[in-house]
Length: 516
Figure (cartoon, rainbow, N blue to C red):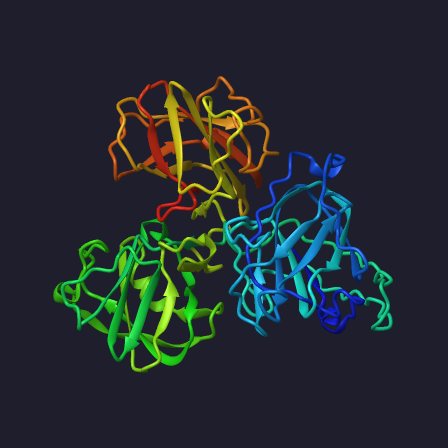
């Protein structure tokens, strides 16, 4: 990962149109075609004219899919974006999401005001030029992070995403009434070969259930709500459940719960361990809530658009390999609302971030095991040849019409010969024949692929699932495909004419690659 520190941009004047750059947090999903940097775009929206521009150079040691995070501060709904351009290709409107918290530094990874439109770029090894154009008056840009780690979630100034270098381009500052701005000096960045945070050094888990209850409405259920409401008066109590089966045998060094604030509160919240995991979000009411075992930790709300983070390391260590439920209540009368797993913005949903310890067992050694989450996954359909499904919470296979699924993993941490590699996938539906898994030679694809441009299906089958029953995990041996660090891709197919739904990385049961 490489990190571009742009702190001097905060006070950079951008001419009459934009007096300063401000960056807000949001998600941009720019799906470039393969080898995009070697192509000339056919039709692009031009960057803003008569505004300031800052320039920096990147020097990538390897090619691959890079995810881009920007740390933005907005002055309001009309000043919450900037324009980013790589190597004179099609630029992108980064941020631009209504409702972003003003005057607060926010990490965003999306474009065009759509938090589901995540920026992922297919970049070749070598030198690249980054240009940052002012777009809206009052917006500020602080830092940029380029990372191959799809699960990276920056906090603060991005310390949890390992920084390769932090050059600070120094832009020229023209008179305020000048219509143009000289570009800043370029800076050379040299990233390490790969990030050391998620995936491979940990896991990112979504809740399998979440809801809240109200004593004043003891028979009401709120499991379908997009927010979890936590309050003291009137009392509202939130519940969350995580499946920690993928953490079995892992040595956990850190486990942090992250919640996106949707309603302001500076009160204190209590997080308690729940004794019984048999509750469901569609049936839980105040009249049937489970008992708890005391406070694990406390948190203090925050501003709308910010993240609440709670350290649950000890509790998660005690529950690895099991279901783990939490209750969150409040002793404050200013209600805290946080996004639930039903939130329309997938980037706002709760997440439990896990880091593994360097001591045994460690994900850095194949003798003790590495658990890798997908870098991306999607499916393609013969009867919708131009459609892409990279943001779906499922991947699918079907024999007629043909539907295939693709998964890509960035494997890191192998230091001894691999003895076992298993692809673990959760079934959403049932099927008699199951699916076959094949290794894909071409890793240069994105989750925007369609049936017409998807990588070809090889003839060799690595393994098969056999008969599938809904609600179960299935492990397929893919050991021959894993021998070294780097990208590895798989395609899933079936000969059964009954469609099969499997959980994707966007679901609460994401696929994992387990290597020993």
